[in-house]
Image 1 (tube, helix red, strand yellow):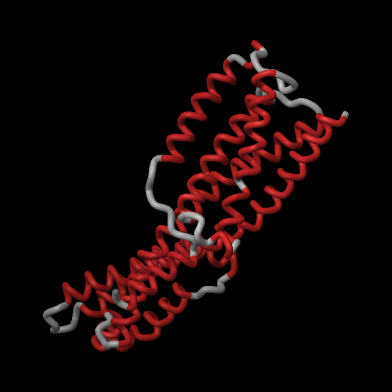
Image 2 (image 1 turned 180 degrees about the vertical axis):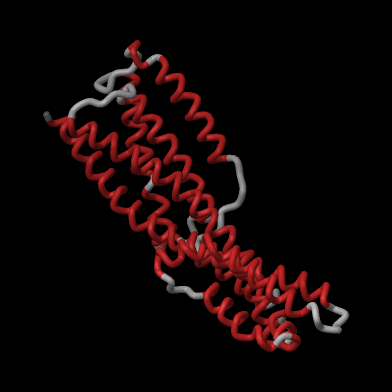
Length: 283
């Protein structure tokens, strides 16, 4: 195994395993979506009541799913649980429970608001469920892009160190582009532009890269070198890697922001659920 392969493997482990494309969560979403549509259509028939029977059972199921959701957090952060299965599997189960639990709770509530404490609990649960879907999208964006784009960037940097980088070849032909290419690379790879700066870079990096490419090609056209076609293709690839890495950085910042919001929402959900369960059974 090469050093680059070892670095990629270690990165995967540190990032709790990158999600792969699979159908489990999509299938669970489809099935629960169909059940919700059917339940909504017959909600006026009052087949389910929260206080007894099947409706009460749905409440127990939903609460059990919410409690079980904590398993992923314990597995991810608990060193003593490191040998308890693949974290990717825990994540997949976490997502499925995050779909089944709210579905059961909605049937428990018969798709209606009740008392103040039950309404707060229901609203908190729906917020966390929506947040979870957003988080899954961001998680996949960040982690799927991380291993491809970062490894491509690392390869470009190794080429530059060994004197084989396309930027070095272009600046040999057109020295006046040295500052522009270096400045663009620093701007693309800047890890601390702030959230607003990161968002602005996300939307402008493609346009700036195309403008720089046109300047480089125009500058090289007067050269008598025979490998201009190769250099143009290599430059295009180099700039595209920069675009993807810059955009990945923006996704990472958005994911960090989501995480900072999702955690307080989860705390609110468990607090509201605890108050609701206590109020229902004691009063």
